[in-house]
Length: 393
Ligand code: PMP
Image 1 (cartoon, helix red, strand yellow):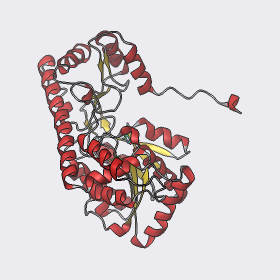
Image 2 (tube, helix red, strand yellow):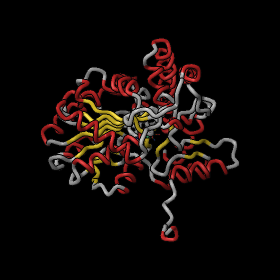
Image 3 (tube, rainbow, N blue to C red):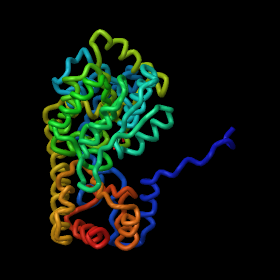
Image 4 (cartoon, protein in one colour):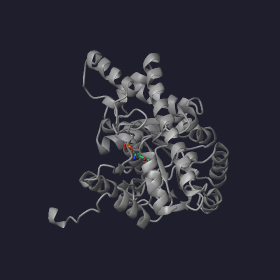
């Protein structure tokens, strides 16, 4: 049996991490993997998370199974964080999942069960694991135009024109904020236009919200998701707590399915069934940290302050990089870096330029020219700016 297996393609980002480790140069810069790092290159445990863990250690009395959907307190806290009061609670079914990846996978499985003929529309480009999961599950998908490399911004006319050819019942995958890999995002007005198009064409939105709080703030980053929740009859949302709570390895995510209130019980039963078939009970530790933090005023304030510090730190780095590039290239060509949001920006340059920056300057970014802004600090921004200006200026 096992001899029938073929090698899987190597994960590009993990391969890049390996070459970075092996590079002996002192001034090398790791802008590859999508993990937040502070100015010293460390991915910290947030102080509110440490406190919630200490509290759980003392107060938890059992490690017995939770429900199939996970802890209801987690679902309620996340519903309020993501959706606020944009939709009636009785229209929302939810399951805890292993990370945002688990939420996306379960969402795709739900689509396959409910609507096997639906095509999923994905932005060009999107997070590569979206494509990989869609392929693995045999889900039909097509790309819609999204990023305009010549401007560094969203090609909104192209996006709307492409989505206009979707057929009734198709699913449109949208990044809730901080688009990965480009960093280019829709404005609230554009979200409203997308909402109108979805309604008119009877399409179902599926939002992947993996960076709430990393862009313009916790509420601002959920605004597009909430605009859709307010207006659409049906919607899926996969959210991740990996980044905004810094609990990557705890595998903490949630899938929401919003529909007619009369259907919620059936939808919830199907979500529970998906968890049961795939791994039974979802991971609980990270979920319990999140609900502990979100429901305690002091812990929540501490978490929000730390998250806000991370967010504004990344914005400062963006501005510093854009300013440096303005000076060095004598042009506003790279100003979009300051307007992008989240951890990533796609430079929009060819793979050979990415390779030159790695070889000649020790700058490691993903082959599609995605760079992780959180991999920088105030001292390394000039190094990156010099490499970009020299190679791409
Ligand atoms: N969606 C997007 C767009 C992402 O960038 C990521 C993380 N790289 C995820 C989902 C999933 O994150 P996780 O499974 O670690 O929570």
